[in-house]
Image 1: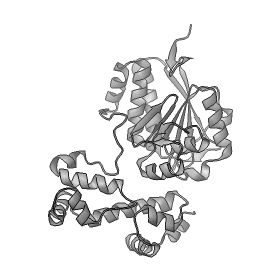
Image 2: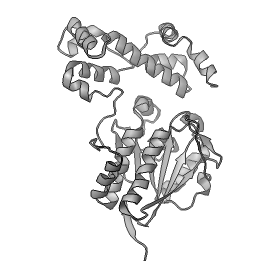
Image 3: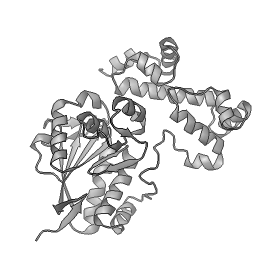
Image 4: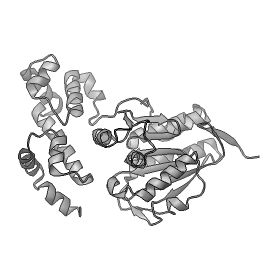
Length: 327
C-alpha cells in the first residue's frame, strides 16, 4: 500500500506529484528556492516525498535571465498534479494569457494546491482564482498589484496560505514558505534538517513584512534612520519632504541628515530620490505602464520633472531604455 498524506484536506499518495511552471524570464533564485527544498526533503527523509516535473506555458523551452532554459511539457499536457508551483519574474503581464488562466482555473477546480512565487501571484490573480482571498507578491509589485486586482485582499506578508491557494514573494520568502509547507506535511523536524543543509536560519514568520531595504542591522545602530527608510519605502508615490519626515520621527532636519550621512553615507533626500528612481527604472523595464503613470507611481509632480531626473540618473529616457531592451 502506498503512503498517503493529508494535503490541505485532500488525501494524496506519496510521492506528491508537483508541477513547476516556469515562465519566460523567470529568475533562477526563486525557482531554486521553490524546488531545492523538495530535493533536500527527499534526501533528508531518505524517501521520495515529492516528485516534480518542469512545465512551460505552451511546451516550448523558456529562457531565464541567466541564460539557462527551462524545458518541459505544456501545462495543458501535465500529468495529474497534487501541487502546482507557478514561478515568474519579468514580462509577466505579456505572458498572462486567457489559455493560461483557463488551465490554472482547471487545476484549482480539480483541488490542486497552487503556489504563486515572485511574479506568479499576478497570474493567479489575473485568472480570478485569488478573488476574495488574501494574497501577497514580490515587494516591488505590491502597490501595483493592489491597484490592478481590487478583488484580492493584498497583504505585505512574506507568504500567505489561503486554503489551497498560496502566494509568496521572491527567493527568500519562497524558501521560508517551502520550509513551512514541508513542516506542515511531515512534521517540524524535517524542515529544520532541510534548512541546516542550506545553512539557513528560517527566522521569518509568514506575516513578516517584505522590505525594499533590509534594515534589521540598521535598526540596532541607527533606529531613526531605519524608521525613516521604512516610511520612504512605503510612500514612494507620495514621499514626504525632509522637514515633514523629520517631524514625524520626532527629530530635526539637521539631525536627521547627520544620522543618514553617518549611517549610509547619503542625505535622506538623495536616498529617497534613488529609491524612487530605482522603482521607476523597474517599472519602465518590467511593465507597460505609460511614462505618466510611472511618474505618478514614483511621486513625481510632473512628467517633465520625472523625465529630467530619469535622464540624469540613467543617461537615457524611458523610451530609449525600453527600445534598447526590445520592448
